[in-house]
Length: 318
Image 1 (tube, rainbow, N blue to C red):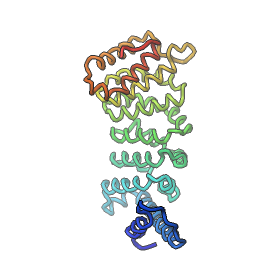
Image 2: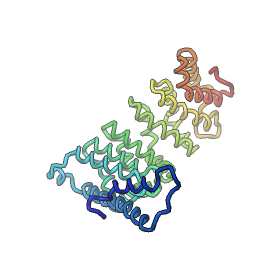
Image 3: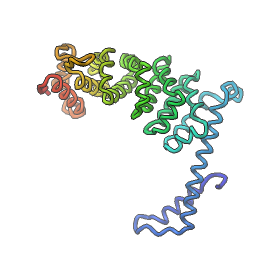
Image 4: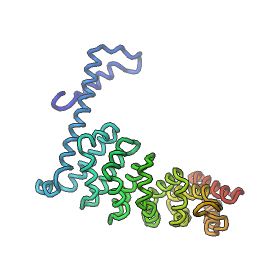
């Protein structure tokens, strides 16, 4: 491996010379294949080496870093770089192999809110659609740390990023979903829906919708905590994404718990609050939206119509 990494200029020229788009791909000689493989392998080795270097910094005690004049901004920059590397699933898994995952999880408890938030963001990248890393984070008690930040952090941005990481961690992860439920994660979702942050609300609504789709019985928890009433309120949000996400969540609840006499809880047709909310929103769309706005609100209109039809067994006025 060359001292400064692979010769990317040479690699580019080699690639173009073998595929210019105007003729069939040439047969590669054994020498060409070997050169290309070594060039690609050297880049992989470089990244693993860099992961080890970043891990060493993450493992260094805070007081030592401060003595060496390493600032919070420096750490944020390091975490930004780490996030770029772990966008590759292989590199994400390698981070745990080189000992970097546990100290990264430790940064969720850092005294600096921006570092806590950025650490959660990196963890979200690591575990997204990655069962192996999901398992590694669960085994390292990462869900507990993320839940603590989600529900108790004094910084709203850090709470929001923790929720995003939780969403990535427990998706298609039954152990994670069970852990979220046992730890009263739904109470945290309720608090997020009650917040004034549109971004926090969106993330909470999207996770809630996923959980309701995955576990029909969780509808009882949602209704008992009054999440359906909060979603009714958010249907009138100024943010279109929040309105649509709230409607999706309500539609899942209505499908699962409409007049359900054998369920732990239900949403009944006589719920005038729901009926009035739907009528008000349908009226607002029908009377006050321009043609351009109507086109932009196509999904919202479809959700409103589906919700009304599912609940009242009759077409809406849309």
